[in-house]
Length: 141
Image 1 (tube, helix red, strand yellow):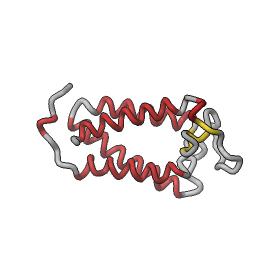
Image 2: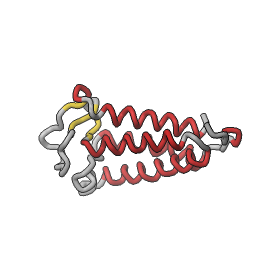
Image 3: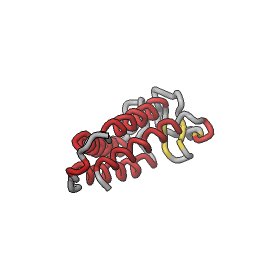
Image 4: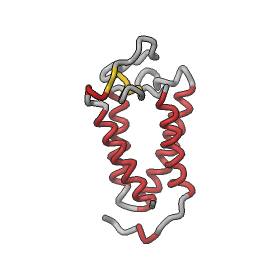
């Protein structure tokens, strides 16, 4: 798979997941002992696993749109992959630090989000920093 298709797939998945967070049937309420959120709008667990709220969904949609735009060129796709790797790596660290696991009450980053963010950052790091570049992929779509 080329870095452009990485950006396309991540863009589509992030966009779908962001939209899914707005579908009440896919979100279960948070437990009473969940970390306190300043933004409770849309708070719950997507698919019963991943803590989300309105801002979390918006973050996913933004990363989705960025991935779709990045898909247009190799250089943009590489930049997108590197950005996702670094930002989601930071999200992993934040999710492990109790005072930061809700991004100061704005975006929940704890629980199952931690392993998912490790996976997302790892794959993005591969495509952003290690994968061989296919220059034949440079044509704009």
